[in-house]
Amino acid sequence: MTTSLSTQPDQSRPRRHRGPRLTPKLAIGSTIVILTVLFGAVGPLVVGNPSTVRDIAMTPPSSDFILGTTQTGQDVFAQLAYATRGSLTIGVVVGVLTLVLSAFFGVVGAFAGGWLDDAFSLLSNVMLVIPGLPLVIVISSYVSDKSIWLVAFILAITGWAGSARVLRGFTLSVRNRDYVLAAQVAGEKRWRILAVEILPNLIPLLASQVVFAIISGILGEAGLSFLGLGASGTFTWGTMLYFAQNGLALRLGAWWWFVPPGLMLALFGAALSMINFSIDETINPKLRTATTAARKRRKAPRAAAPSTTRIEEAVA
Image 1: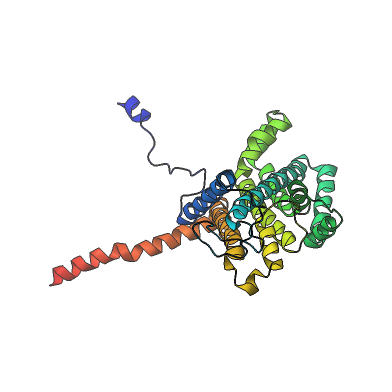
Image 2: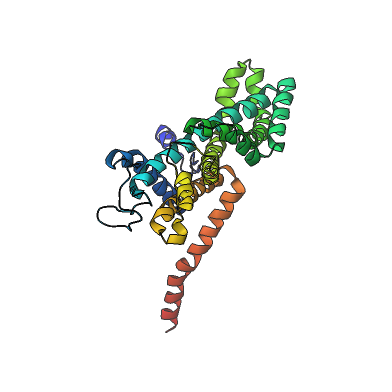
């Protein structure tokens, strides 16, 4: 009898959620992101050449051209498909480079301590003091032929310091916990302590930093392209808005030229923000508690309504 009871799972222990809860924000944000990624991956394979010039300028959406044409007769839908791929590529590259740089200068420096942590912290502070957007504009203005990779590299170099500071503070907190100190006393190798004891606790924060870096990279590239300093010879959401502005699309009423890239930019940014907020609920216990309490308050009136109805029936 004792053996059978001991083999049963302990129902009194609450299950730990290792990932973000499936909230409406997470579901909506993930759906928009997946659809956008599919459009950017499959769209360029089925549309024609976005640079093809035709003698049908500024035609509104029709059966031949879903989103109409530009002032030179170029297919706006084809441009949007290639622009989605270009913007997503820049966002992913910026996110990966920012993750590598911030993890190296933030996590490794804080774990190593000593003069290495001081040097990495000083470099992060210097990069935080330097204004990012003017530096990006100056660097971009001196390079005439800019590829997507160069623009992404510039945006990552100027945007990793803030994430590094956040990761450094959290790593210093985790480094002083009991299980890390016990691993050090047990003689574990330093690289194993970093990889097994510290990094798994940083995964939600690293995921949040990557999502934020992708948003910053896409918006930063769109701002540079709108100023004429973006990637050359490549379609992105920012370059579409730039060409629409130069083509007087707003003045001529060609809404099909500037609304789709602006809408895609806004929707994708909002979707990533929803995902980032869901990750923040996992990281921050206070935010998670507040969200759970708000959800219970919304369910309380619906749960109380049947009991009130039964009381009224009993009185009648």
